[in-house]
Length: 223
Ligand SMILES: Nc1ncnc2c1ncn2[C@@H]1O[C@H](COP(=O)(O)OP(=O)(O)OP(=O)(O)O)[C@@H](O)[C@H]1O
Ligand SMILES: O=P(O)(O)OC[C@H]1O[C@H](OP(=O)(O)OP(=O)(O)O)[C@H](O)[C@@H]1O
Image 1 (cartoon, rainbow, N blue to C red):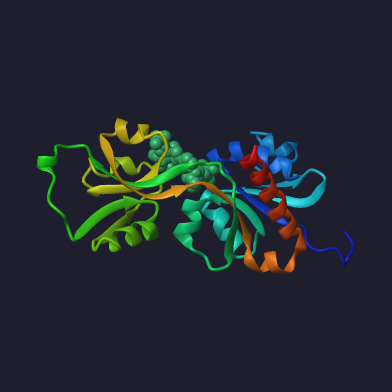
Image 2: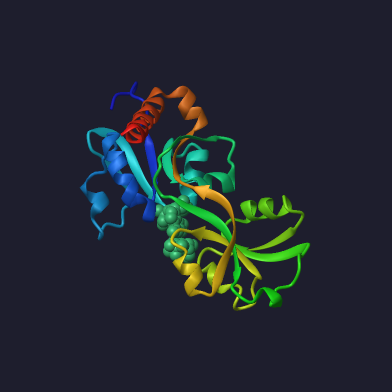
């Protein structure tokens, strides 16, 4: 790299379930992680990209948004749940990738309707999404006290930690097996290509990546 070459771009991806669906799209957009990315024994968090000086970093889903919003990564892939929860002003989500579909829902114990108390003005709710939870309940005139958990939300009602949960639902199996029922959907979710707004305005490589992903999604929709 000469002194005049721009700094390599950093592309952030989540570690878990979105990745399986995201990798084929990334590859078709020319973002191909090197072999070490697939080496389960590797403890590296930053990887080469084939045919480019771009770096690919693999972080927790919520952290993808944080890296991109702060410009530490310029591009990333993350669920719209994460985009909406943080609502970072410097984060722009220009492409719906049509993968990682699920929903953010309210759930409560599947007990008899007769045993359920009437409408409440204050509820304790367990969630990994405090902002979306508060916003949803405030819109319905209910003050939500959110107990922040990072997983296994479904345990909270039976152990008296909260009366309801707000969590991601896909097949609904986890709710069912833990004696809960979905009572309302807050948000339909899919994965988004996200970019740092400043990088998008100032670095044409970011714009080219956005166009590459957008045309892939458009072609899939037209097929
Ligand atoms: N059934 C599901 N459960 C959880 N997330 C789902 C589901 N279906 C799709 N998703 C999407 O996947 C995202 C989680 O992505 P992924 O599992 O790749 O991240 P992660 O980094 O492993 O997350 P975590 O921080 O929980 O470890 C969610 O934010 C959501 O957008
Ligand atoms: O409707 P389903 O298909 O059952 O999927 C929903 C479950 O999947 C997610 O958990 P995940 O497996 O990511 O584990 P976590 O609780 O550690 O987040 C989510 O938090 C639910 O628990």
